[in-house]
Length: 365
Image (tube, rainbow, N blue to C red; front, side, top):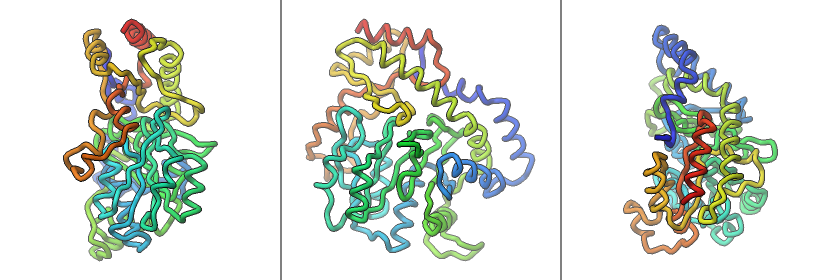
């Protein structure tokens, strides 16, 4: 079986260093808000290109705290609108709803799967306070037009960088393109922890301070609580693991790109649509999505040939029960993507034989 992602093998690649740092944390007796957090935040800020990184429990919390902090700073108010791509993973939308803000769904571009910047301005109202872009599948969603719209309408630009660690736009890393960015270090991400973990990056010191407080029970000083906060801290073991894996992120992304390049050059079956890549620095291939009208049949066919695949995502957010008020919405581009998308195996440890086998099976479908 060719696995979609063999996390055991991915971890084994760094096992010696991981065991060393985990043992160091265990022996230190300091497990929260210590040196490992401080060093990882410093290293990640330097990597992304922002002044501040605030570690937290997971990627969803990272996005929630950004919007919560803007509310605490009176930059946003419950009921305000946030534009978000309609075809994103539901976490992007949950973060908006969690804060009493209103998600406004905008269709993606069918070729890039990123929010269609030509459709954003029509969705802006006097209640709009932010655009949340999602670098879906590892491809940069930012465009100069989006930046111009944010300036024109004085909107905050928030990035969901959960799937795009190491991605670039004209020499700038995703996560440093907007006012703030949420990052997930879920184990399967390009930069993955050994459990849930996340972070916010920003150049806004005031925002970073509010987020750090909110994620620590609302405390700015021990036993002094300025906000009604939560417990959402990045623990020392996960920070230490991430510090190790960050050193190899660019190397791993380069290996992912080699796999993607082989897929794109050699998948010749006219029934299958591969991703459109205009700038290879703007895609880090967290996911390698293909589209096929016979998607479910193709998935069964691949499974019969011992190739594991995943659908990202089988049900779009506006068709989910938790957002039943949207269930009658017609979003044809989003629905087409969700009906046709199938994610191929992708990791920096795939062998040439694995990739050759997958391509051969796809071309024979």
